[in-house]
Image 1 (cartoon, helix red, strand yellow):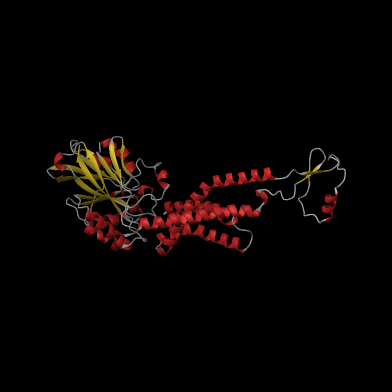
Image 2 (cartoon, rainbow, N blue to C red):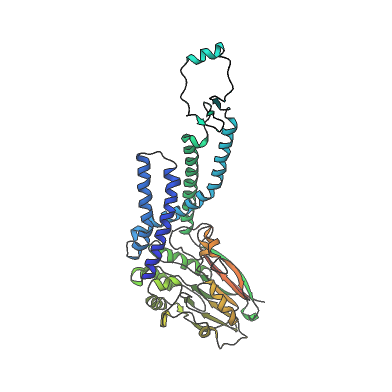
Length: 438
């Protein structure tokens, strides 16, 4: 509970600073003092409070907060990214306008004892002098005792509220329309059917008789308050169309308790595979009552590989299939941390071994045990570009096939989403991994 409160507090501070910046660029810079600015300020405060309220409220069962809260979180993110990117061209534009206005301004008029005497006004000047003069800016003293009065009509961009407003409003409109378009596209992608991908991975130890063994791999289904039973049914149907030998569900199945989501998870009992369906825990299972979910998943027909290994006898050959708990697990029993020795130690080294581990970073330890292939998820492929760049700081592989210390690692994008129901640059995915004899 304290970890959750700490996360929400940190999130509240960060989002507060982000909203302060958004208020400056979208409200203060684009409006003049008055009711529109006041309305914008109130809106910014409400939206800033909505983010932590959503995080806490959805955990307390107030799921009605999920849609507005998570959609605003995605929109806020893209507004921030776009406005920060626009800072440079806006600065260049302001400097260019300032330089152009300075070059176009007439020379200032000198007034005082050191000024050059003037013989007298001409007839035209005398006539003009009789006309009322336009108000001018106050004269400024100079070093030689004269005063310098700016020429009439010489107004720079810093002294032109209309020009500043126009530039700020243009940037705000561009950022707002682009962010809304990206989020709309991302919602449609996230809530759509998963993409079905096929990848062939050669394993040196795989017997020729097992060439072409197929493992349907899915992760991060994230059954939760924004998905419902139809989401699970759609993913199960996609997996069954692959007609796989093995189904591997590599963690982050749920975001809620069995009491809340048991009915939404029920379609998992319809998964079909010649040699069984298997599951390993992800970090979100430990937020959602892992003991109950392990029992429920087992009841639905998926074998839970908790720091253990099985022999898969197929097509005249044998493959070791192992699974470890998520690296975030702490505790005893069902909540025990990953035990690579229990899952991978004391095995026949001539056999190929495929490890199911939720996070790709587990390969750093798995490689020490000579694992041939690790199947993982967790990253969502970044889910929302450019988050994929940040994921690379934590995980050795973000999406697709990679290698860590000699162990091949395949990372699927996941079939669901976490937080905002938005996917940009990382479509939901179910992958058919075909093992090939090298």
